[in-house]
Image (tube, rainbow, N blue to C red; front, side, top):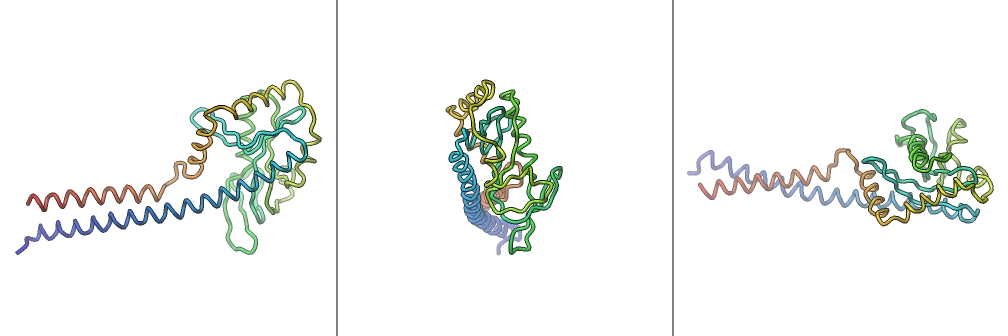
Length: 244
């Protein structure tokens, strides 16, 4: 007759192995779903940035696209830096569709999508881009104007009309392209050297990973940890049963 303690260990072994399989399968499935969602979001964002770049190129502006700079232990990814005559413009592109509810000083805005009751809370891009402008200003020591550009179909409150610019109105806001002053030209050249540096690609990849997951709770990682712990528990239990 099998002792109760042995039956309990068999039960622990079965439960641990089942948890190992379940956590592993869940991590694989959830990871695949997340990668697919990240890919869709990246393609959507890139399409908007490409439309902005084409608009600026056709209008004759000199610009840098997808510049990542490091500040302390953090990184900042800037969609576009445009060289103006007397200043630099730092652009943050959004491809949102729908209606924005919020004010310039709010930490978050509410995005209401067309034909949907879903309300999405989004970090205020004005704050994000203001930080980008301060970083570029700290590097170049020249005037920097931040601007959020809407490359989607977005309705904004009247008070945000001069802060969130439709793509079609962007060239008129920037003014005619022309030769920059010496300070602006030197500042832009410094940013171009940073863009061309050998570590730019690695820095950009690091920033994308941080923005995708950051310090938020990561369910995929938690499932993998649970799978490893469950497997270890199953192996230890099996070892005790075999040695007994």
